[in-house]
Length: 446
Ligand SMILES: *[C@@H]1O[C@H](CO)[C@@H](O)[C@H](O)[C@H]1NC(C)=O
Ligand SMILES: *[C@@H]1O[C@H](CO)[C@@H](O)[C@H](O)[C@H]1NC(C)=O
Ligand SMILES: *[C@@H]1O[C@H](CO)[C@@H](O)[C@H](O)[C@H]1NC(C)=O
Image (cartoon, rainbow, N blue to C red; front, side):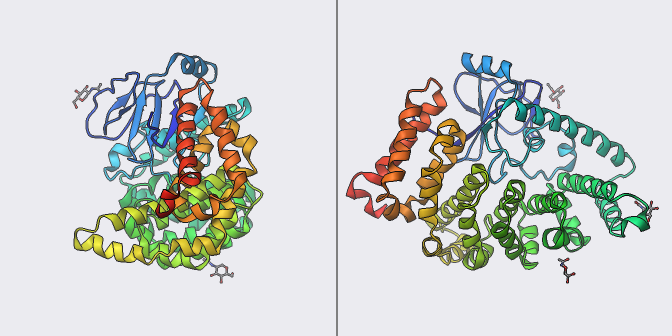
C-alpha cells in the first residue's frame, strides 16, 4: 500500500462542509479515498484528509471502528496543515463570507493543533472554542451590517485599533477591556486578510506598519503578540505582493528573533506559520532570511523545551523548502522558472543545515521522544515525511545513528501490528525510509 503523506481530519458530525465555490454537487463517498473537487459539498461525518503531495483534499467513508470512535468523541483527530495551505486564498469575497467551508472549519480549530489525538479535556476545550468562534462570527456579522464593503470594514477596524492606542485612562476603559477589544479587532482582521485583495488593502492603509509590526516587535502582552503574528501569517499566506512588503520590512529577522528566544508553544507555532508564509515560493526571501539567522533559529526550536508538535512544524518547514527547491530546479522550462531556478540555486541549504547541526538535532528529537511518537502517529508522519525529504542532506549522519535506527524500527514494529490502516501504512512508509537510510550503498548518491 502506497502511503500518501496526508493529514487526517475526522470531522465533527455537526459540520456540514462545503468546499470552494465553483459548483455544488455533493461528494459521493465510498470506502476509498477520492479527491474532493472544488465546490463539492461533503456530507458530515466523513474521513477527510489533505494529501500533502498534491495539496488536494480527499475523503472517504469512515470504516466501522472509526464510526464508533467518532460517535464516542466527535472530534478525535483534528489536523491543521503545518503551513496552513489548506486555508486557500479566496479571491471572490462573497463566497468566503461565513460559508461553512472546510478551510473555515479548520480555521475555527486551534491553529497549532497538528493532528493529535486529544484528551477528553482538550476536546471539550475545542468545542468551547468552536462555540466562541460561532459567537465571534455572529458579532462580526452584526458589525459588518453597517458597512458595505470589506474595504470599509478594514478601514474601520484599523481606525478602531489605532483609536485604542491611547492609554486606558484617556480611553476610560480598563486594560483588560482594551486588550480584549484589540484581540477582537485582530481576530476580525485575521479573518478578512485571508483574501488577497483585503490583505493588500490592509497593507496600503498602513496596517502592517501601524498595527502588525509594533505587535511583533514591541508588544509585551503575549496574547496580543501571538495574535499579531498570526495576522501576519494570514496576510502573507499565498500572497506574493504581501510577502514582498513584509520582507521589505525586515519581518524575517524579527520572526527569527522570536523563534530563538520564545519557549511559548502558541507563540512558536504562530511564528513558524508566519515565517513559512513569507518564505513560501519566495526564493529571494528564503535566501536572505535563512542564510542569516533563519536556519539557526529554526534548528534552535528543535532543542527547546516546547511541544513536540512545534518541533514537527519546524522540521516540516525546512523539509518543504528542500522540496520546493528540488521541484523548481527539476523543471526550468520558461524564462520565469529559469529565473526562479537561478534564485533557488542560491539556497545553500545543505551547508546552512549542516553548519547549524540540523541533522543531529532531528535525530535527537525523534530518538528522545519514542514514547510520545508511539502514541501520536499523526505527529510521527510529519517527522517521517521530513526525514524522507531531508535524507538527501542528512543521510551521511543519520545512516550512522544507531539510536535513530532503533527508534524508527521500534515505532514501525509497533504500528505494523495495529488494526488501524493508517498506522499500518505509516509503518510501511517507515520501513521504506529505514531502507533508504540504512541499507545498500547504492543509495549514496540519493
Ligand atoms: C445547486 O445550484 C443550483 C443552481 O445554482 C441550485 O438551483 C440548487 O438548489 C443547488 N443545490 C444545492 C443542493 O445547493
Ligand atoms: C475612539 O475613542 C474615543 C474615546 O477616546 C471614543 O469616544 C470613540 O467612540 C472611539 N471611536 C471609535 C470609532 O471607536
Ligand atoms: C519599537 O520600540 C522602539 C522603542 O520605543 C521604537 O523605536 C521602534 O520604532 C518600535 N518598533 C516598531 C516596529 O514599532
